[in-house]
Image (cartoon, rainbow, N blue to C red; front, side):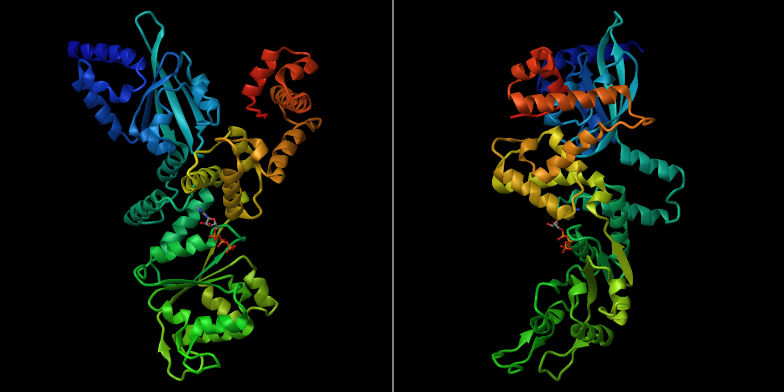
Length: 493
Ligand SMILES: Nc1ncnc2c1ncn2[C@@H]1O[C@H](COP(=O)(O)OP(=O)(O)OP(=O)(O)O)[C@@H](O)[C@H]1O
């Protein structure tokens, strides 16, 4: 017992000591009692849950590795900062200063990578009853919800081993940088992809333009038994019908004037692998028959050829069109439709999975920062605007918007003025619409006051350009305007 007391005292002393040191995590070895602390931090890095220790003013001086895994934010960005500073720098998107309370408290918090975490903070008192430091534990909300599902038997219908394998695969996928999946809807799609990939059936991938159909088709191939075979992709809408036929089926020498040599068709190239027919809805009717025949007979003839070539193919077709409606209108062959439609994966539009917007935005800004050797960041207001927009062009539009902002934004911080007007206008209109209070509506007085304040300050700043003149026109002090600009995260040039 007395030994435990000693360790505890030493630890508390050490914490005070370390709290003064910016590089606390890395300077442990220098001090006395280092073995115990080293062991302690070593153990903490094995913890599945995240732990954060902060001093009595809320400045984080230790975080274990799980915090980085859960938040996807490097520890260097967290350690040494207070909750307020993290909010101001856009590392966190919601205020968490209230966890610096005298009582244990749990809050949920959204961070810049789009992850939502549950933080439970407990104050540790000194001998005089003052708060000495805070211990907070840190868990991802979606993980907690998953645990709840398991406890409630929500996913009992699959055998345990299968579930584990699926989870491992999904984690493996999520670890790779090229596909971002955070929303519940996309996680479901991903689970279907992983279930269908190893089963050698044809798949129809549908969804609006730019939702990521191509990326899903590639995943199916990657997780199929054909993964070491070829993956070939053809855009049926981009090539005129006559050319498309020779591209697909190939031709023999002399098949037409100019064919001095024979050429393999893409169906042949894809043999023993996977072929993606992108924009299958644009395939001319004449070619639909020929492809159907190739699928049914598992063989093709090159143009001008007489010798059948054996084919072993998995076909994935993708379209943003309503193929069923095209079948009814007789512009798409029913028999081909049923051949392709063995399994249908529907990819939801981005506006139906808003939880993916911020993680995708961070993924793209990282990619383009690397590509253009820049180091740009979004303000929290820009993140809100991106999240509030409907993205009719889906992920592709988001990707292009961010690439443009990285290229054209001057300075390292991407502010509202850099957003295309049609996106920033939505966020502005949304603020204004919040002002249309209807009788009996549930808007709180606090929210109403905030909305009016934001609008008045924004318009005064736009009109008068300087804080001092805006403050005079609003009849408040200069510092009141500065405080509110900071609180509402308004940005002005
Ligand atoms: N979940 C995602 N994570 C990362 N990047 C994505 C994701 N979904 C789509 N993208 C990117 O967005 C762009 C558009 O995706 P993709 O080409 O797969 O869409 P599509 O639905 O096939 O579009 P279209 O119907 O126009 O052919 C690509 O650059 C792709 O890499």
